[in-house]
Length: 148
Ligand code: HEM
Image 1: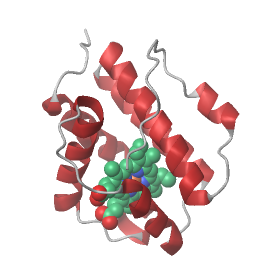
Image 2 (image 1 turned 135 degrees about the horizontal axis):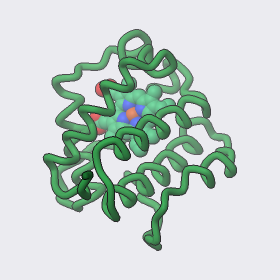
Image 3 (image 1 turned 90 degrees about the horizontal axis):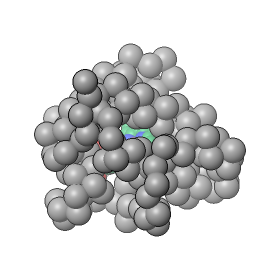
Image 4 (image 1 turned 180 degrees about the horizontal axis):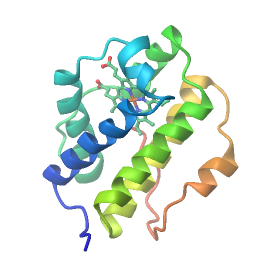
């Protein structure tokens, strides 16, 4: 039986498994191994810190992902379909491993951040229907994360 997501070790598990999916995905893998030079030894700890900060407000992350993705986009465009795929894989990963309110909360926050990120990076309002369909089974009324 699956349990709910708790602390940082669970978030690390999600990120590790997420990148297994990403790197096996025909649409997203090229961003990480062709279009951009990603140093995974540095990227993983930053992702752990980022998601720990989003979920547990630990203050461990000090980057600016909106800016990072704007810079990535300037080098190689990130399309709406790429954000959709990113979210699909993120949700699939969470559902594979965990079940419960915190797991739903993580999906909701990822969705909200992705919406903001897509609008800021592409300068086009994201397709509302796609993001509506990505609303997890959550009762949370928290405002969207701004992620810096
Ligand atoms: C189009 C979909 C996306 C692609 C192709 C993508 C790609 C990347 C790449 C290549 C990096 C590494 C940059 C580097 O090390 O220089 C990165 C970093 C990161 N991404 Fe994404 N990303 C996407 C969407 C998202 C979304 C939706 C989120 C959050 C919900 C996110 C969160 C992050 C974070 C937190 C970092 C670390 C930034 C830092 O180093 O401080 N990404 N992304």
